[in-house]
View 1: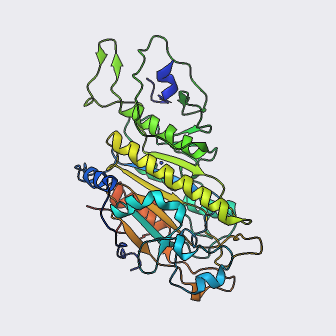
View 2: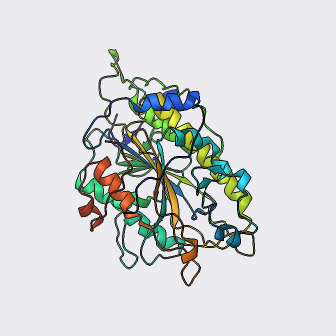
Length: 406
């Protein structure tokens, strides 16, 4: 198999401020919790990361953080959100001050198993509220007054390329935009997750199967994936990973699983969940999106455990910005500044990190002050996760967040 091609399933057939707060009390831990804790005890291979996968989930449009991670103990929350505020009896309480949106119920076992972290207050100095400019800032890890061409992951792979046997630096599923892999990274694009051909890294064109090459065994995932575009994107991503872990077939027969599979692995998977620009009628829209997100993340985690990749994977959400604290007249929210984001994985030290929303300190535009620079999250990936020089890649020193277990 050529390094520039990636085997998919269809070919086989024919992604100061930061100490964690306490976890919410929970009663008897269910079987899923126990399974997840047992999976987290598997040994982790130290060192940089060709064995360390990053999965990015873009919440495109800017998710409303206040109705996702809810500061229910602050009376200003309901004063600002008389119509769209989440009712107390519906919330999923995390501690004495904070709760989750009820649509995130599938994530609660992961929270209790302490492999799910929430970083609050993420943004950057002088936030830009344009979709296009702000996501450019997040993708390139620039300052608000700085214009960079290369994505932050592109610069990371320029500093230390992935192994020669990898098919690409990353794969982008469900989007035509390269995001943090822009301008230089070797990236495979899978714009339609319902299809899974062999893709060429350079021109994104399907390549015909080689009739002389032995057919690879089709990996059979036991995980049940949710439907819809986002669910299909996750399924495609997990199928690609399963295919990369499958034993090779040669004229002499299948290789052992200990034999490394060249030409199929990637270091990054980027997924996109669209629809978070909720200016109108937010409650129903956001609930549906967060349900897709939580069910998809749980399915992703189950698949990663199934083929032994959970401890070597870091899953992280991001978006261009959050929403304004005060609801608008259309039962929605307008572009804002900060937002919380999620991190999960077998090596994640779960809990609440960052700076909770300070509703008594809104700026002149009615927006929340910045709590944590988003590049601290990137520094955590580049440094503790991959063992790279984060300061050189981000062009400034940012303190990593204490999100990872040793």
